[in-house]
Length: 164
Image 1: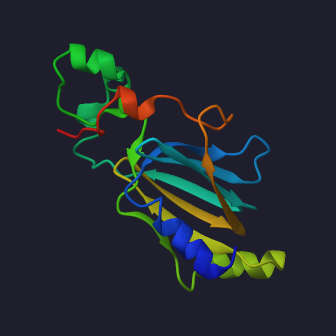
Image 2: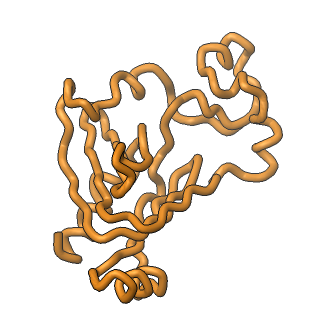
């Protein structure tokens, strides 16, 4: 994928979508992310990923209110009267403001020099966590229900991740 295609792929459909799954591929070279918009899911594969950093986007003052395991189980959280805090149990995060290609990335340039291959850096910002990746290429494909990567029923079960 050339640089212009990569930038477009990061803008849509990754912007303002639900990230329903992410992490290293089973063979640990590539980083996978599944994004959903309405009933459509997209598989993003960041190939040859040399660095993946995931940090919380939940505010420090919200973490203590969201500490209990109750917040990891959406139906249990509802049964308890929807207490204040971040509800981890919705099992997805809103990609907003979304992905940002890092122009003139020092980290990507260093990896390019080390490996002799062009590398890129992206920041993916959500309401629950932020992901920073250094990678070589990006492959995006639309998933169909029944594909092994498809994440069933996440958005049907739960509402928007809540911080009260």
